[in-house]
Length: 215
Image (spheres, rainbow, N blue to C red):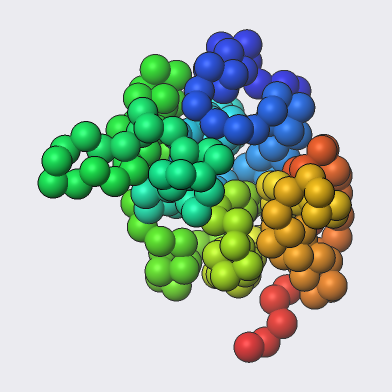
């Protein structure tokens, strides 16, 4: 079942980069996985995809959790392609990106604040102290190999049996985009712990079919 029209309208109006078809695929995955536990997102930005996870969590009576330091990823810094000056803190003593206020407004306007736990911190540090199995992990954080691998290593072990691992910006052709998420996607498949469920443009949905290998 697709998200309610008002949720989809809020998604389309929010700052972000995910197209509608990928958003609908993410919502469908979240709707399914919510029966297994909370829905966790790595990489919040301004909350575009968080709206979909929150809406699915609301319908299932669970919670969406989103993790981000809110200082922007590499490609969002000044001088880079995806930089947005409107999300730079204008305090003279700071002057750095801060997407947290925009994210909070996005959730508030959609009426979804009660269904989201927003964790402000760096993904590996949060993952290291996390102890709850989750129905879904959505990896959409930093796109360097260092950050994408850290997100996978930190959060994939927390996906519950039968739960879903969703990876965004997977581009098999280097001409289409960076390769770090694609390499993480291959790594997940090669681990034998996950099998592919669906492909929607750059969004890959994988299901846990085996437990994490012993460290």
